[in-house]
Image (tube, rainbow, N blue to C red; front, side):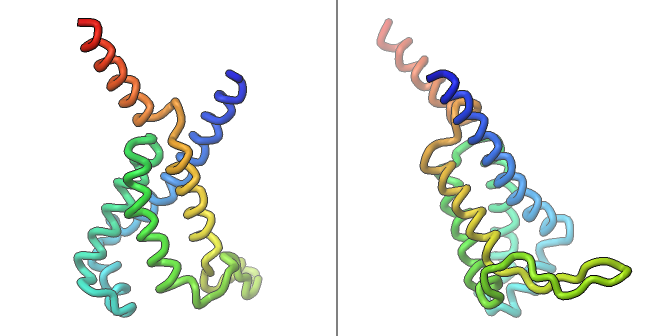
Length: 159
């Protein structure tokens, strides 16, 4: 049983790190370029309050990604992260079909790819929801917080 739990925790750590890093990297890229540049994209997509939404998306991706990597508040963070994913999928990626890799040509200067479909959105969504529903595992901030709460409540009962 201990071997199963160790494997389960390892797989959850891997999922958390990959998914969390992906979100954090996208959030950091938006922050580094300046959310106002992302807001211009949102304007062209007719997103209401594009400047506010650009900042919210940036913060959700960056903070949410770091939280998922750490296994902190994963179930709560899954809500805004899911909203960001579904919004991107419906407003940008859906029109390009499923495939996330659309090879257009290969030349001496390298490969040229077309627009990205919704495949990666679904993969991120499935992994995020898996971690949120199963829990982030024993090697996580959430598990540490739960252990502290339990220890605290046991200490109060003993006194």
